Length: 100
Image 1 (cartoon, one colour):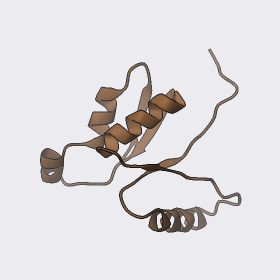
Image 2 (image 1 turned 90 degrees about the horizontal axis):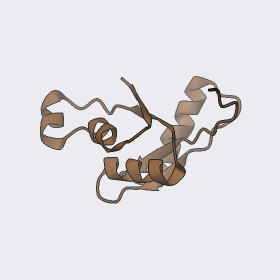
Image 3 (image 1 turned 45 degrees about the vertical axis):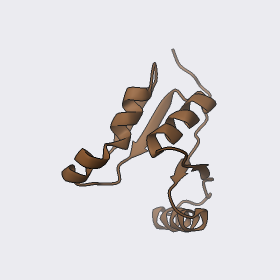
Image 4 (image 1 turned 90 degrees about the vertical axis):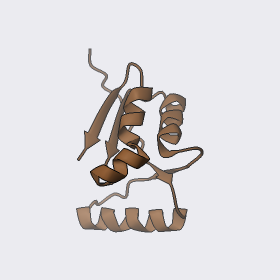
C-alpha cells in the first residue's frame, strides 16, 4: 500500500535556548548546501526528552520517527538511560529509524 502524500516535520526538543538551536540548524543547512531552508519546529522539554518526543509523535499521529543519537558513552547511557530506547518502548504501531 503506497501513500503518495506524506508530511515531513523536523522537530528539536529544546534543552537549551531556542536561539542556540536555531543558529546550529541554520549552520547545518548551509553546510549541507540546501537551496531552500527547511523549517524546524521546537518542542519544549517537559519531563524528559523521550516523553516530549512521544507526546509529539502521538499529537502529530506520526507513522515513522527518525531519531539522531547524541553519542553518549556507554557508561553515561547506563546511568542516564537512552532516549532512543525509551522512545522505541513507548511507540506502538509506528516505525523508528535511528541514525547512528
